Length: 169
Image 1 (cartoon, rainbow, N blue to C red):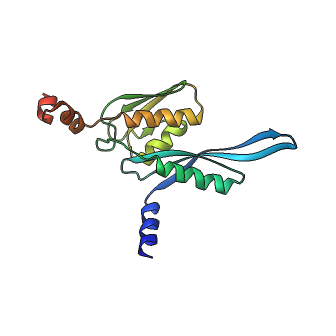
Image 2 (cartoon, one colour):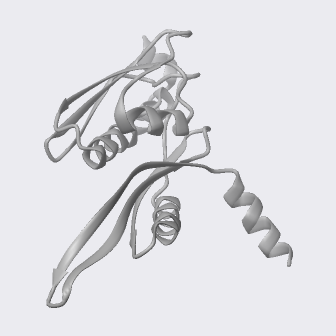
Image 3 (tube, one colour):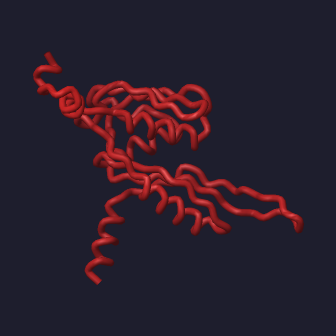
């Protein structure tokens, strides 16, 4: 019983957002089979975010699958205060998303799925630009790729075998 309570508490710490719900159909011998495809994002607003895709015959089932998939695919994002540590370009298929740190008080200047993912990751101040395809799925995946590639100054110092002071000069 305690384990169930712990699982519920752990799951409730994540915020969930639906990025896309679409009706899809498959043509079979007897006609068309209708199902629903859902793209969802999950994050704790403290540096963890993930996206997931779910598909089912009913919308509620598809949403549950998408959220469960997103929780399985969580990534940790390096943050510097309320913004990003450095500029980064995330690419996925024909979409490129430029993520640029901004000064305090700027807010999240982003469109489409990028805004949702950055807010779920806990980013407060950032500038973004989407280039190429603006499909929600591609934009979400490109944003996630960009966030995965972010490195904090401590990570870079550890990789190079130097101290933070040596890197900053």
